[in-house]
Amino acid sequence: MNKVKISVVGIGLMGNQHLNAIERSHKAILHSIVDINKDSRLHAKKYKVPFYKTSGELLKNNKPDAVIIATPNQFHEKHTSSFLKAKIPVLLEKPISDNILSAKKIINNSKKNKTHLLIGYHRRHNSIVTSLKKKIESGQLGKIVSANVMCWVYKHKDYFKEKWRIKKGGGPLGINLVHDIDLICYLLGTVNSVQALTSNSIRKYKVEDTAIVNLVFKSGALCTLNVSDTIVAPWSYELTSGENSAYPATNQSCYYIGGTKGSVQFPNLKHWYNKKERSWWKKIFHKDEGTKSSKYTLVNQIDHLCDIVRKKTKPKINGNDGLISLKILDAILRSSKSGKKIKI
Image (tube, rainbow, N blue to C red):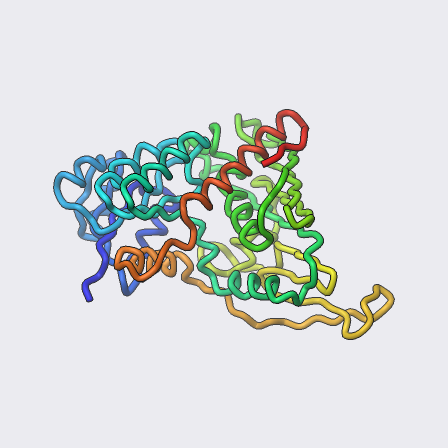
């Protein structure tokens, strides 16, 4: 079977990772590169594919089977529209957009043209996430009561040479925590309300560098999300999951999910429980699930895109999923300004 030809639009940090993932995939082949930055021609030469400055040039010359869009958030609507109109499936990097109105337009464009839109929350393509989801749904933890999610990292000054990262939408809420928002919603269900505090006291940029977010779920469960890109620490998904060799693995956990029958650490999947009577006076045991993290979640995501192109399956994470995460993110930003609890 011929490989699915995929074009990548936007060769920044994530665009580069997608290029590597396509090269590793047995189902896909790189079709072309689109970027306004002339330096990206070097990537095109490396992979021996055509280079285009705009999506219009690409579509005029040679249509791909699918496209990955990894441009800054504020350009997502502009860059997806031409491909969806051409009925080319789009894998759009998270978040879906920098505002809700734009996100809805992207989704409506997908529906109008009957063309699939995938959102790049690649963590859902990891086997350890699947194992955790099954554990929660099986009732092994009982009724979920509370969760704590950590995302503490320290970003080197070179990271901020891309000026859009110090402007609206470029902080750790929009870049990092959106992944955790999507994942915790996937695991625990619908969020009813949020309340948040943010700070930019370390770097003084126009965007936050630290935030604490409280979520109230429809189920009654509570969750705290704690994110900062100014802290040297081992507790973030990238450092604990081991799915990306670019990040040194710490063998720690960054998610703690507790229920009436037990609790679990994630990603190392330690399950804590009492054997008979549930009591803090009784010995608490734990078992290690031993599920290995996939080191190729981005490749798994590429393969999933290929299966969609071949009409073998439907998107795991669609535009509506992206919109839900964006609505929560929007509520977080509004709450951080007003100090009030915001309903979703």
